[in-house]
Length: 401
Image (cartoon, rainbow, N blue to C red; front, side):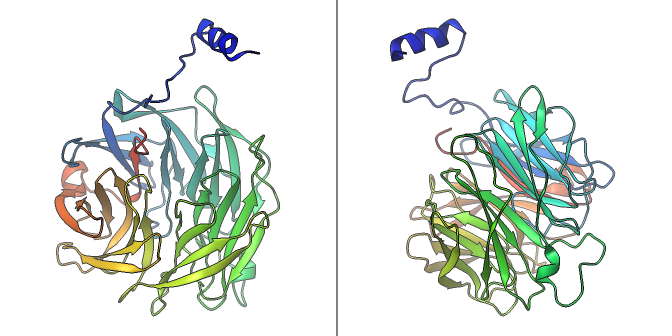
């Protein structure tokens, strides 16, 4: 079929053909999202982002149709994910996953598609999405741990794709099996940039090696393998977050074990999917380095967040070197953040302070290593007291948008 005939055929069906410079969401409003983790009924909290200065306002709560599990705010990364015009979020209280459609003209009111889908295990804590194959995968971290994958349809919602890919947590606990949940030992699930593999972090009890599970993804169909490749990482017993450093082969992971270096850069071998430590990254004075904000479209630096200290550590993604530690004021509580995200030239940080949680907004200064405070958005003051706050995502999800 000629390209001209193909284009004419698509146009006859009412399908628009974008130009090479087409950016579908460039001129639309922007929004930030987190979940409130309410056991009585989980909700997504949407915040309007002022495009000129990055500040937040106009909070709106939308039910996920599932239940939260308060107290899980510091256990995972990517519990709320935005890609294309979809928002996905885990519901840890009733073991389900919710899918929303975001209207570019009204991103503060995402629309729930269908009903939440069971994740086939216990306590889902993180979700990943492949836009190429329209597949979402959630990882359960409770006593019934494992990965469940779904087809994504804006009309039918989440469509189950096969059985759960079991993660045997007893192999990482010595000597007793996991107690009745919510024991959460999985922390993050992420597709690599080429969308050809899916990775999951599995923490140990702090004495045994951490595990990195890797599942091959079929390039043609998007099918996620049922048989993982498991890498045992002796120096990283509490594997937490995953962020690929603009390459399939390099990822930065965190290890929040106190008195440990705090992070490492791993090398992923292909096609074996085996992982090895390329470099241990020492986070100065770290107590619980968990979350990392990194978006290669915006910055060459990764920003590591500590849950127990109000510090943001700036790491060069090319050399793996610590460039700066930025301290921020968190109402003298002495605690740090529980998630972070970059949008254009601003860094958004969800704080851990139980009595006065905030979303801190920082401007990323020229060069990338400096952060200056722009806003301290008071969550309780804006939406009232909520039982939890977890996950942080931005729409649109990349600079190309």
